[in-house]
Length: 258
Image (cartoon, rainbow, N blue to C red; front, side, top):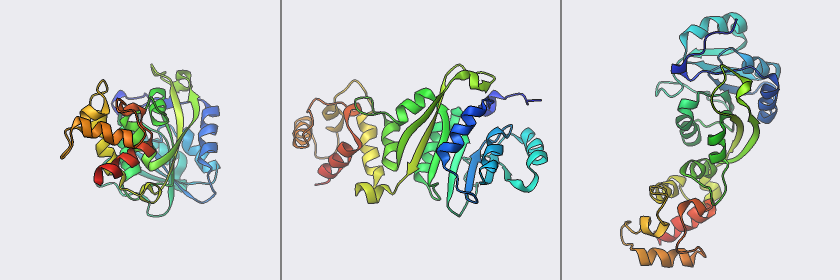
């Protein structure tokens, strides 16, 4: 019998085995490697990860699910009862991947935690709301602050759209599986990505305003100098933040440091 899903934990049980197969395939599990799973729930993805040969470390916040998970998996998984975002949470010290149907109410927090803080996974394959997947994988002129953050730290792609009917109870929105392959942002971009992200936060602080009008308040700048700087980077002086690529943000960050 399927346990009752609790809204407080953001629970919707994945029941479509074909979606589980797509998640595992996208994860490219190497037998014996460590996989961190957030919110194993009923264990449907956990079983598939074990079948693929993964050493599964599963973090479950809902205490009522711990006993049935222990009864089913015994010592075949490392099961931890706790909050994945807790400062006291201990993560794998060896190389690992993060593969999970995550609670949608903490998606942004999970992304920031595992993209920016050590120890980072080498890859994340996550179930998220379709709208969030669209933002993660967006290209200009549809970029957002989430796009900027994710694409600075990882190569991002959509794996598959997932209809609401793949879950019980059915959510009100469609979902999607995304894959993020983490990279060394300092090595790839030549700057601390948080510098560019801080700049992007200003640029996205008012979506209706042009970028020069938002960045003019930075020390030593004004609107005309910002327009000139954008022109020197072969960008339209009237451009808005959502139209900039990651490369544009890198170049702009370098330019404003001169």
